[in-house]
Length: 201
Image 1 (cartoon, rainbow, N blue to C red):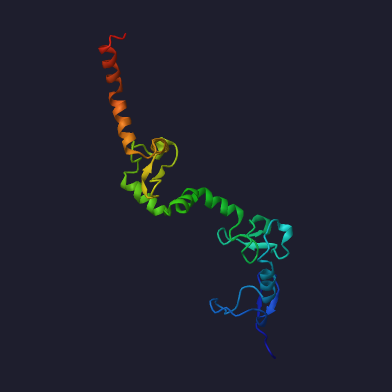
Image 2: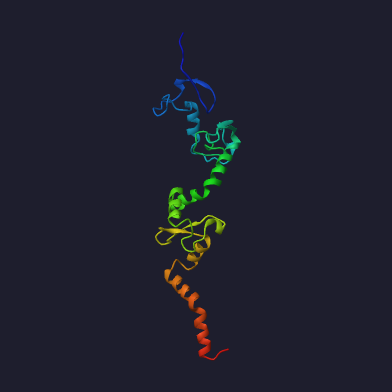
């Protein structure tokens, strides 16, 4: 009796001969995950922009989410035009939870190239407070933000939102900040002296 080696394609769900799969030396079984037919179908559609689910004939009815480990229906995943099955890897619930938990750090890495660990180390070096006014994120009521030099894009430190806005409104100018400090410290005294010298009451 001749035994034919078989493998089930996760895309179409059909148990097929291993001859119907391409060779892939990087996988455990030395075969591609999807069968040749499903891969050809995908390759024929890679240049087509996915706009809605009705446009895609090869969407699987169900898919396993590697994050929560649950098998979910295809409409519980966002579409993804470059993935083989047309769906994103994680389910919608897991993606939302990840963005809620890590959204701030994702933006930091995208905008500043700063990892979560690097942000935490900078904040730790400042004693966990705003580098200017010394308030904490709890006192601020929101996370402290990264301040950077707008000319060089180099990170200067981590500030509360108010201090960050103040630096921006003063055009990142240390001279304007020094002049402002002098104004706040001595403005009242100067005006009083002016009024007294001119006998203005």
